[in-house]
Figure 1: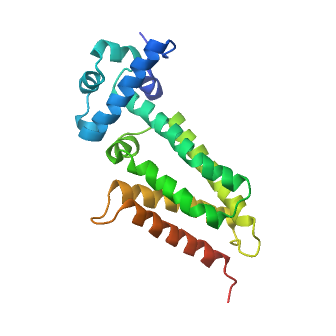
Figure 2: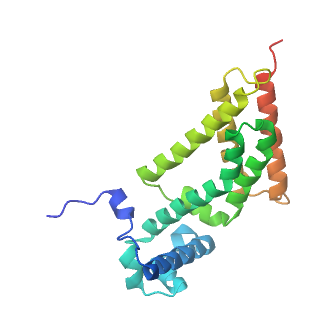
Amino acid sequence: MAATRTREQRLAPRKAAKQERAQLTVEAILEAASQVFERHGYAHASTNRIAERAGVSIGSLYQYFPNKDAILVALARRHLEEGMTVLAPQLQRLGAGEAWDAVLPDVVDAMVAMHAVAPMLHRCLFEETRLPKELREELEALEDALVDLTAKALAADPARAPGDTRLAASIVVNAIEGLTHRLVLRPLAGVDSERVSEEITTLVRAYVQAQSAPAA
C-alpha cells in the first residue's frame, strides 16, 4: 500500500518546468489562476476554469499541478518574491543607514501597493487557505528580517530610540502589515490607498515617538 502523501506533498508542483515551452505553460497557468481567483474567489475557482483561461488542456495543467491548492501555493510564493522586489529598495536604504523616519512613508506606500494589486487574490492566498509549513516559515523569516532591520534603524539615533527597540520594531512591522491588509483588502467607502498610507504612517510614527519620549 502506498504511503499517505503529506499535505506539503499534495500542494507541491508535480514536476519542475525546465524547458522554455514548459516554463511558458506554467506561467500561463499561474497568470490565468491569478485572474480566476481574483474574479471568482477561492470557492468558485476550479482547475477547469483555470485551464480554460490559460488556453491549455486540463491534462496539461495536471502535468504541473495536482490541484488548485497547489496552484494557489505557487501563486503565494510568486507573490512573496514580487513583494520582496518591491520592498528591496527601501530595505537597502535602511541597511545603508538612512534614517528610519525618512524611509517609513515609502515602506508603507510599498506595502499598500503590494496589497492593492488583485486584492481578492491576496485574500485567497492568505485568508481562505492554509499555507504549507515551508511557505509559512519563509514568511516568518521575512518578518524577522524586517524586524531586525527596523530595530537597527530605530537604534541608530540613541537620543530618539525606543527603550526596547526590538519590541518596538516588531510592533511597527506587524502594525503596518495588519493595517495594510485590513484596510486595502476590505476598504472603507471613500477612502483611497493614498489616504490609507498617510494614516498608517502617522500612526506608526506617533507610536515610535511616544516610545522614545523621556519619562515624565
